[in-house]
Length: 377
Image 1 (cartoon, rainbow, N blue to C red):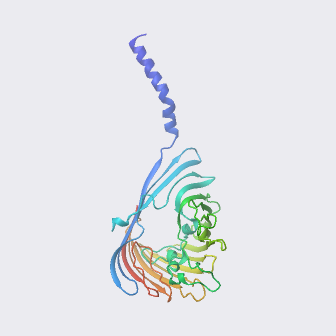
Image 2 (image 1 turned 45 degrees about the vertical axis):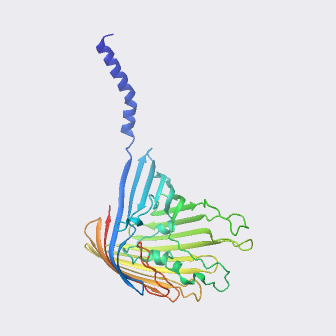
Image 3 (image 1 turned 180 degrees about the vertical axis):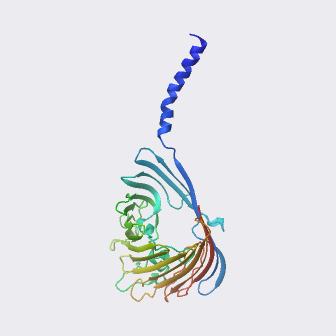
């Protein structure tokens, strides 16, 4: 065999070996990876109801990476890693992957399954109700109970209650150790189911069997582009722990409903929630919001109210917020906003959107005026 023949034979052998790999590379889509995030900060003039301050506030700024790799015509592997950041104070930047971070599988016909850390379905249900920037967003403070959970009446035992049941939490929940299923969209409906086991079972008073605090959640949401409506539920066992051998634990349970519409330059929404610790403390909460666009200028407002956690608690509160946005483009918005929380005599609700709003004294009414910038990428 000549030298040229040997070279041709070797070349043909190499080509034959590489052909299957080349063919596979051509038929298997390359993975897609996307960097994304939001930076939102504002110069703020605020008051805790007693003392006025000027502050630079950060509003849930974050950075993330997400990706998808198709493994068949109908199945993809997906992932997301998201981290909270604080451009104004790096000491308040969060641990890597402290926000929604997970790995999962996505099927166009069967739905999506994710495992990791993610917002519970109740928190994710927003419709066209959650629209505000800055401090004046009523969804978290009112609907998710973050205002009432600060109540001074936590130490007060309701009539007919038992000692130790003053605890009353909020349901703004980004849950770790989560398994969540998200259905495909069918007839403009999407259904979600979530479950988080409790990996750290505890012992109450050292005399009862170990108890755990698993969390369950589900939602159904309708959205046809114009009208939207949703219903969600969430429950966590033993939020109030068993007390010795005689009193069982209590679950913190919540339901939430939203209704809204988006027509032309108008957007509006309603939301309702009920939060119950099963041991004598319960709030009924509602809010309304609306927005109107005039070109790049958008006028926004919302109002919300939380009831007393039990009769005579005097821990009810309201939140009022107004805002004007100016969109420089699809990614960058500048805005001005003013809001006020009105607390009853035993309430001390305050803004929780920013990193370091000062906590008010009991019964005082916090206010905030923001001049801010939001950049989404």
